[in-house]
Every structure is written in C-alpha cells, then in structure tokens.
Length: 432
Figure 1 (spheres, rainbow, N blue to C red):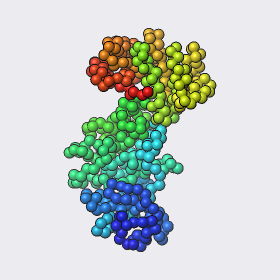
Figure 2: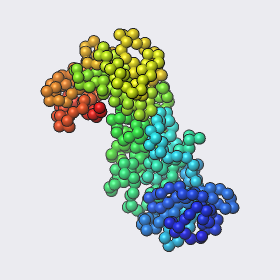
Figure 3: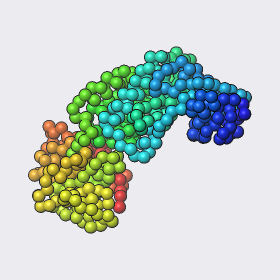
C-alpha cells in the first residue's frame, strides 16, 4: 500500500514501500497517529496522518516547514512527508514517555523543586525556538512528554507554531492555556508562550487553575513568579523565557525550597458551632489529595477528634497518631502532645477550636491563619467583630490570613463578602 487514506491504515500494512505499521498511538485534532517501523533501518517512528478536509489552515505543512530545520534534543525530528488527495503523512521521531497531563490526571504530586526543574527545561526549549524565530503557541500538558526513566521533557505538536513576522491571522491556541492576546488583536510573541508556561506551572503545583489555591499552598516567591507569567496584559507579563529562567534560578538558590518543607496552618472559629473542625478536616483532605504528607492536630479540649475517630470505618494507631479513614490525627491528650510527633509532615494543621485571647499569640506564629466564621445574617455582627479583632491582634505577623465561611446559602455569603472587613473570604463547600 503506497498511498493510503487515514481510515484504511491497519496493523502490519506497508506504507510508501518502506514503513510497516506497528500499531495505533492516538487521535489528534486533525487526524490519527501511528507507530511505524522503517523496514531497512529497523527504527520506530511516529506517523501523523492528517485529513486535509479537517486541516483547512494547512497546519501540517506549517509544522513540517518549521521542524525540518530545527535540531534540539527536546524537539522531535521530522524524517519524511508524503501526500495524496485526502491526507498529509508526516513521519517524525517517536517520543517515548507519558504526557504531563497524564501525570496530573493521576494526581501525581510535584514538589517545588521538580516544578522549577521542569520549567527550566521548558525555558531552555523556548530559548532555542524563540532564538530561531519560532513561537509554539500551544504549550499545554498534553504536548509535554515526560520520560520517567530520565526525568526529562520533550515538547511536541508544532501544528500551531508560527514563524516571527508571519502575516497569518490564524490563532488556534488551546482554551485555558492560550494567552489573552491569542483571542484578540493583541501582539503575540515570546510572552504568549510564557503565559502558557505559567498555566502549566500552576497546574503542576496545585492540580488546578485557582490562584488562591497556589497562594494557600505555596506562600513564597514561586506564587509571585507564576502570577507574573499570567498577567492579562502582555506588557506587564514576564516577556521572555530567559527572563522567567532568571527568576526561577533565583528561587532555586533559596534555602527554603526543600522537598520536606513544612507549612503550619492554624484554624480557629469565631464562635462555637461554626464548623472549625469540619473545615480543618476538609483542608487536610485537600492537601492529601495533592500528595502532601498531612497531619491534623487538636489544640483544644472539645474532644471532637475522638468523636470523629469513633465514626471512622478504618482506624490505625501508632506512636500517638490515629489514622482514621486515611486522615492522620493527633487528638488533644491533656496537653501532653510532643512536638516531635509532627516531624516528617509537610502540612501541619492545628485546630485551636473557638478563638480566645490566650491562643492568638500562638495562632499568629502559623504560616497561614484561617478564621472560620458563619455567614448567617444573625451572626454577621459577631463575625465582623471577630475578623476585625483577630486582624488587629495579628498586626505585624508574617502569617497569611484567610476568612473561611462555613457552608451557607449563596445570598448570605454574598452579603458577608460585601462587607469592607472581608478581604476575599472563601466559601467552604458542604460535605456530610
């Protein structure tokens, strides 16, 4: 078979007299990808079969034209191109590994050091591309292949790439990853790829695209750098891969970046019954879902932890720490808890119970302080007094301060958020 249609290709078919089809790899935007073997060289390659009727902007021709002159270890090599009336066939280097999207979907946790290292690799690739007048314009986890054995990255899919000075008005970046100027008439260029890298960093660090989540989990300059990649205006954004690289190198050299860095988070309730322990348990569940070793410690005499443990379906106990349905808990043992019980945990959440004057000083020593309040109308006055009082008492503290509203009606939350004392309060989701 020398000139197949995309739908005609089957395993063991011989294509163009020199390639044997080994199997199907996947479906792309404009066609299908197959694993093939060169009959004489006995080397495996990837065959992209692009349906012309689904590729009106000739992305296949642009990709082939761009890749043919690029030589970089992280960029696939193009070996051959064939064409018939229906399809374009591009033979490329076969890239082994898994996409970053696959790892994110598996909730793989990436440490700050790993994210910085991987982003620096992306910056190296972009420095090469931009230095050759090429902008990728479709950087996303699906297009970044991670080799688990070597820990290195490859950047694939150049169907949306453009050369500098291109007069084309076609902009087809992927939603959520494409910079704002890709959707309008703004100037696109190196800063557009930097924006996409910023979104990838945010996903690797938090598993989502919520900047509040980034600030809560990583209260240091890595959050500031991600924000600078994601400015809406391309004029305010980090403009080049080299500029981003310098910032990341600076963070990488700081001593606080550690694989085992601990973050202390203090929870207190404005009054009895506003759901402090419930919210602290949700926070612990969130951090565990991101791969952090998390412990929840009771620093009050309510006895709520033992009540929770009694209802758990699975319980284990070791060294004073209960593991109840996957949550590591240190109940209040009448003040006899040793501090070294918290060692080895990356997120240490302390439930102080109801806010009292005698705990404010210790609470303010946390990295993050969360005041749990009620948005109920009849509690609004007490809530506002508690927020103002704690904020004033914490003046001078380096802790980040968050107001968390226990599960409530959306209209009550809006009323709470409208008050000038509330700076971006967070509505806690309801969980039984």
